[in-house]
Amino acid sequence: MVSRSRPGGRPWLRFALRRGGRLLVSLWVLFTASFLILHLIPGDPVRAALGPTAPAALVAARRASLGLDDPLWQQYLDHLRGVLTGDLGSSLGSSLPVSQIIGQRLPATLELALLSFVVVIAIAVPVGVGMAVLTRGGRRRRAELAFSSGSTVLGAVPDFLLGVAFVYVFSVTLGWLPVAGRTGPSSYLLPVLALALGPAAALARIMRVEMLTALRADHVRTARAKRLPAARVYLRHALPHALTAAITLGGLLLGALVAGTVLVENVFSWPGLGSTIVSSILEKDYPVVQAVVLVYGAGVLLVNLGVDVVLSLLDPRSVIREN
Figure 1 (cartoon, one colour):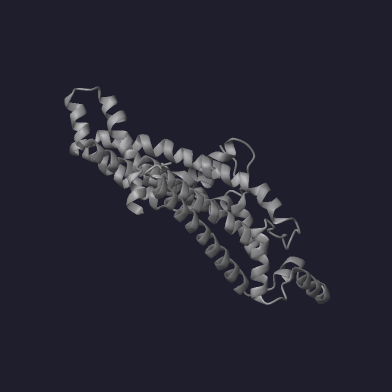
Figure 2: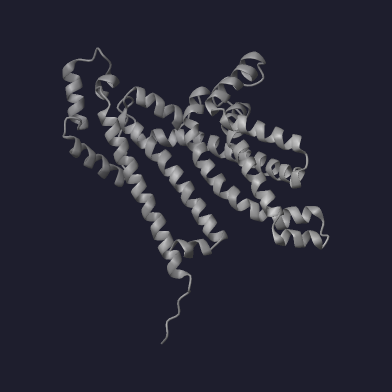
């Protein structure tokens, strides 16, 4: 009996194993680095949690119960074992399970990041494509200069600074939108725009360049020579080629948006993981900080893995070339 196997099976398997291995190694490095950095910071987390007036005996008993008097390597192994078995520990301040805190805060952060990503795509793709069509062949130089200057400036402004400006103008001065909090649909507008406008400007520039390159391709020239409708030439023959770069950069931007929520959430008092990690760092709440760092790291790594998989599906030759 002759066994048959698909020619692409082994390259795909090696691709998946390599990507999965890199993800696990990256998470382990992130876990180890965050553990060492947190434990090298001067200060007593138990004293910070119980307060400066707590009796020394109570502080000592609490430290012993949490295992903080054990050697550092022992604490590392205990914590690593707990993470691998799904036990993230308890908060030193509130004594709540860390998994419960993350479960309460994570939805707000995901909402903010995903809504911002949708706004980024909704702005960047049509603006980039439209500017490429308008400025194709060196036409409308003033529009091209205005677009390049505006997108450069907008992309250079930090998101938290944009958030502070939005609060001052639209909340404090005009009184149109809530200053802070997650109180309703209107409360999403300012933090989402603060997170999305900079990445949208950067992605629009990339989209314009990729669209201009696609419009110069031979198959697009052929389609134009056949006198096909302009909308069909742009949308069916040029846009799919330009979207490959947009998917790559868009995936990276999604990871950056997830990480960027840390500062923006604090500007708008958003009840997500970003505000949680800042308050936990100030209170030296090691278990919460380390778990949130892992969640953020895993989110960014999973997004990058998703981008790699999507690109490999769009262009299977990249899998073979990499192997």
